[in-house]
Image (tube, rainbow, N blue to C red):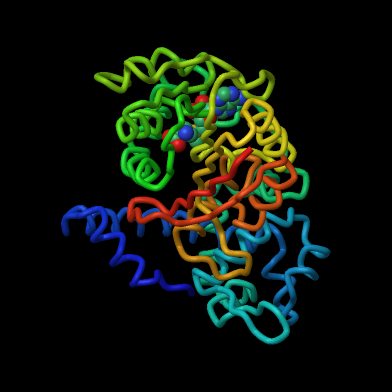
Length: 351
Ligand SMILES: C[S@@+](CC[C@H](N)C(=O)[O-])C[C@H]1O[C@@H](n2cnc3c(N)ncnc32)[C@H](O)[C@@H]1O
């Protein structure tokens, strides 16, 4: 199990001045989220046949991908989470079951057999859950259809949730992204515009266009108030089917690209490259995973959320470097700015 790096936590704490009460609440909320993901992990190990495969002995991820009907990115999430929750461990021959994992896998102890059945029932079990993990699950569908939200009230509810979770990361991004000299940012999938508002507040000469689906427009405009509203405007646009607006010298994808499959990310980055002038700035603000298994808990939780809700994945810095280079971007830099409320990294590049 990978521990949180305490030196990082300390730097974050001093940077954002968390109160002890807020910190305690946040850690407890984290435990609740971990509980949900632990249940999913055990259920997934049962549903995909991972328990059966590892009962015989250790296996490498490469062998497991041949044996199980699960996509490579989904398998990585399950293995990472299995390590984190202590049902798997690394060994010389690959990954193996721990004593706890073996108790689930054997099915001989009625307590663990019932616990496995309970986990499977808790995630809805059966074909729908298995289909999320399956090799064919990468279809990009309409965003709100996928979320099961189409009516205005639930879209507003989702956007409000995103906007509330954006407040601290938005300030973090505004501190970290150097926009000196930039005039106009295109905030792609910008939702209610929280990131845009933080950027224009930090950069007095900057304006921003929030590009998002037309259904988001009324709630976004109602959310943006004060000075931010003067320098942030909303443009209704479906980025899967329409080009980004011209005239911007910076493009931001904040917490957007992990939602999409690789082919769509390639298209979106190519679109950003086309919309920007030569030397224009690009920023991707995302949770990143490390390349090897054994990711810290914020990554494990984020990765499970993507599995449950989107065709995309939590990618590594190397993945984004490859994607950005293929789209023609240069001067690619990756950093993880201090933000205890999130685990986002900032990737910047030039068109
Ligand atoms: C995960 S939210 C991120 C919102 C915001 N950037 C943040 O971090 O708070 C993804 C956003 O992308 C928008 N979106 C999804 N598909 C879209 C599309 N095809 N065209 C435009 N916006 C889209 C959604 O409406 C939503 O606001």
